[in-house]
Length: 301
Length: 223
Image (cartoon, rainbow over all chains, first blue to last red; front, side, top):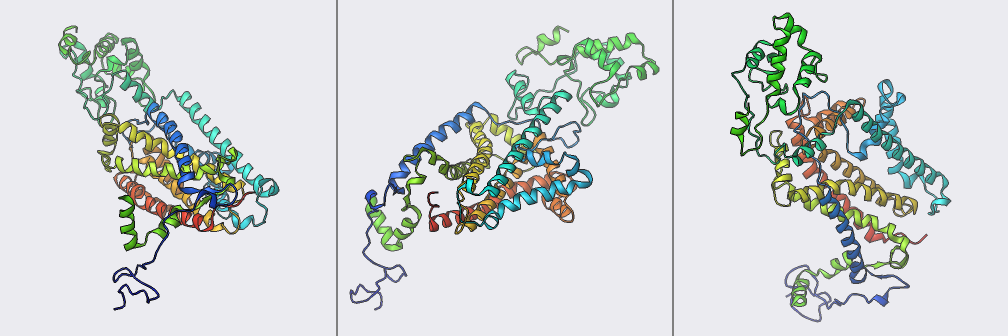
């Protein structure tokens, strides 16, 4: 048989497999077998590498635990006032598109030509920089181009981030993940899928409720105060605004979505006293204070 | 005991040569921070791989809870973040790891560039490395949408709009990424598939090539 353990055969196999049977030395090379100060990867260097890895991991876990990852509010495609911002490492390409010669008619320069040159040159660097010299200060062209790109990338990233911060400040917007984190911390919101109890209309017998039904409010905020489709709900509005603020909103509008409604309603037959009653009634619309005392809350009104 | 188990397997499969190829190699003095502290710059590649492993493991745990449809995506992330034991840590590792891996990869790229390590005969490994860079950016872009909050949604919308403005190819890229008329249910499932199957597959293949080449050629010599 071809595969029996006959020592006269030149090549001996394990069983009928293609694995060769031979005497092997399983002892790794000794530390001293390497020239100079080289050392074996296993185990000498690996043990040190694990220490570096552990230190890195501790730092990483501290970052992770001290800064929970952000989560804003569910995506709403009909939202029009959201300031979009990509992840930080895309900012430099995003900012590039905001300059006159890389936007509008020249946008192809910003989307294709400049990034194409940058990444194309980076990809093909070994074929462009073919000299034998490896030290960076002996390769002035390659190194200075890299320093220039580095500077441009960092500069564009910083300008983009500052522009974003400035835009938020100007529009008086708090990023949603921060807003939500604050509300969760303050107990105003239940995270993690616990559905919030729907807030009931307070004091339905009031004159304010009747005025509300006649006013133009209902066309957006709905008869049940819950908002038509994606319009804002007025349920619990008293937690957010005082009577004076609501009066101001009725007369002057709110944000970009609502214009002043007072004149239209005065024309439609309501009086200023009616609007005052309405604002007072809306200011009463508060969520029950705490889960354990909903009765007390309704009694107080 | 362990030795005899190893020998039993080794006799049948002859794994010693494979094991030698993978792990038994020398670490030269000029890359060893124990000898020259400045050699810590040679750690960035290894740390990039370390974070990549963290990303793969934490990502695997995240898919136990994540649901890739537009009704439940946000809710599942919110549930994971606030209700699941250690969910906030696992998601945190994936979130921060995604940024750190870019930082480390960037530093590794700069080290290789400024030490001229990409020069002959290591040109191919540089090209593979740059491809890994692009796959990582792709993973970052697709992963950003998955929590399905407003930040994710509008960033993706703008990103796809920019891609769509590219002449000739733009409309095809838009259709490929978006899947429909708007950023919606189709986009989310596509991005999820890209993020979890296509891009990691490409990443692992490229990493395999990267490591095969470095092992075959050895680390570049001292300057």
